[in-house]
Image 1 (cartoon, rainbow, N blue to C red):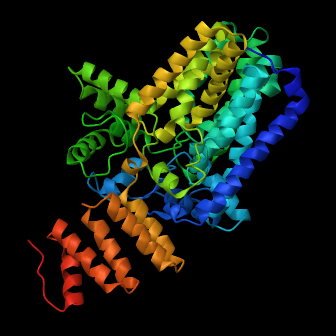
Image 2 (cartoon, one colour):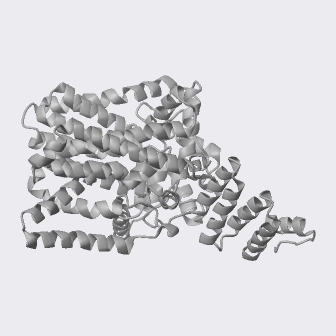
Image 3 (cartoon, rainbow, N blue to C red):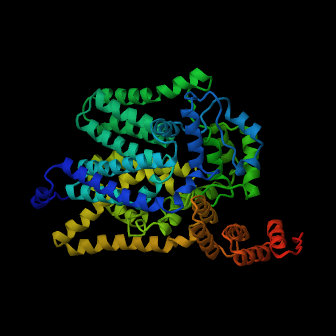
Length: 559
């Protein structure tokens, strides 16, 4: 690995100055992006009533309005749940006063709402600040693991990583997870350099905070403990282990105390494990995404399993695995397919669509790095760093544990985002390796390394999708409603027109477009859209009745 040249050190002599520069660059980019995206209808997706964003928003409002202990049950009941069981049955499976999801993020939002306007934009501003701090943190982490040049590359990649900006625009826990993960990995490095109770305890506490945001970290902690005991820490191993466990337990104390106070199971912090395992491991699963209730096979399968296990995680895992008896090879193939999607170059829509944000954001379209570019460089960096595997073992184990925990349940692109800070450091190492080979004129090795990266880029290109294939009809509808609510009716009409161009065969979108055109006073355009909707869906009562009203005739919908 290379060390930064004296000339580069003269430009920014202090690592702190470099970290502050990266923070400033990241925040400046977010200020431009935020101003532009706020002018569009994209941020209105945070109010989608069937989204996690709206769930977190309502949950935070419930907390800040006085229910800080969560004595009143809060459980959304979304359309996909209705085919499985009535709401009362779901509530019986959850149990009384159990947190619906891991609780830290809604409390994080509630604290912001306590101090700022109780609107998603308040959270987004704080998340932009967190994202900027994360970029500086990735640089700091990189300095501990690699050369100065690799660290700078990693920090700049983090400052400009397109999906980071996107997720920071949404009321989802991913931004908080990314920040906490970065600080946790830095804490491990600080502790191993001179670890006493304080440093290892801080690392354990950060692990506990991450667990209360999303429990995937639980799979990594035994591996970290094994690494400590097997020589990863050369001195005071018992102190390191004790402090790590104590810090983790200390972070969990508020949640345990709350559970005891309200009569919930002491260690239970979410209701979601069982249904998530069913979603990702049922025989009809495609390997990615969440079922929406339209597939009656999955709905029936989930109903049968949950009825038998009453929503308990371990019995659900056992029951699901038993349904694969005699077909374990098929189950293994499903896990491999999920791995492929975890490494896919695109951001599959979930709750919102990165592709839709890109089509509306010049900043995101300006060539910002995404997983498409970062993953080949990170793969090269991991290979290039293998000679230092003892030094980097915690970070290799962290990526392996995170990938395994994600694949074991279900895969969507945003579930890999907490592991991207580590990948960015390895991407920095990968690019640093290419520059080092070029600078030392080792052209044969450079050609091999470049060839490796180009092969992976070609694979990503083959597996990638254009933005138009990754947007959804509801993106256009929700954005158009936002424009209309701001009095921008013409813009709302144009947005739905774009949606109809992308989804010309989707009758409900033509109905939405017809309504908006009628609202804008465009009778001719409204008639055309209603006719198109009726052509595509002859049973559409709304389209038939609207045409009858506008034309003064009676049109009966097809049976």
